[in-house]
Image 1 (cartoon, one colour):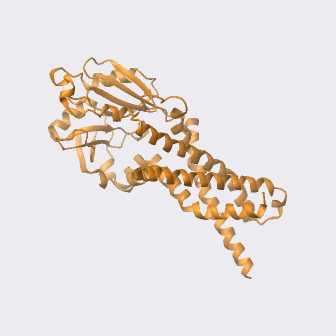
Image 2: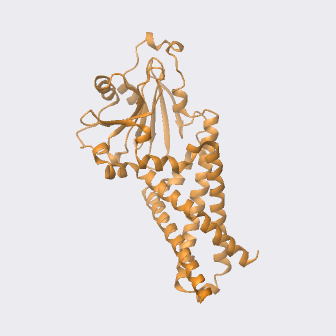
Image 3: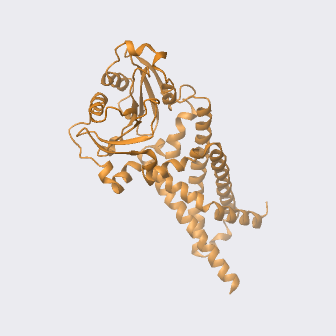
Length: 356
């Protein structure tokens, strides 16, 4: 392959993809630290004073029935253990015709058991917007195509950089310091971009396929719209705390609760989502009448959740390798930005040299 052609390809791919790469790195970092950023930028809505223990599912349900009796809780989002001073977020709505509506967000103080704020989901702020945009799925199938195309181009850019590094390794010793700096950063950045791009593309593809096949555990738990389909309105429903305890003891101790939804006359099961420190996910479903464990599902999928689907998020976030992996992913993201900036500086320097 012609060296000059690869250099030109690599340069223009970097120019074209630079904005996309920076956006993905920035939005991904925001998504990873969303709870912390919520506290920094909106402390009046998300920061709470840590008390002895947070409210249990039963306590939250009972309190909300008194505070906002017409508000139907679709699901509750729980912050991770290292963000215990972040408010719980209750998704739901007040539409009696659609009990699965989740277009309203309630910030809830889990220690004082009070409602902090209520607002439409579309007004949840730039942090939530950046988190959603990072996935591109909000744009439907077109978003899937775009992110996969740009991801493949990013991998091609990274591979061309690695090829150039190997081909010019001997002659590179005579290059200016900026060029050598760019080359060294490029090797680190390329490895990071290949891993994150490939895992991100596969995650998008798998998510879309699972969505089309209706494999989401939570979505299937919320499919029933008519109470007449189930006999629950004539039967006693298991207490939420009892259901949670059954779910809790079904998993190893290192798994923490991330989200859950309540059973009701129109929904025959409790749903609990757990994560461990390496970002492996397990969804647990509890029968609302008997209180028995209905199933444990890897990666939040009714089926095909184990295997590579189970490791996609841990690999994409770096948490597969523990806390050090998460830190390195953030560090390498910073390296990528420096690499892009050094490439721009090299281009400007070469243009000035050519015009001199």
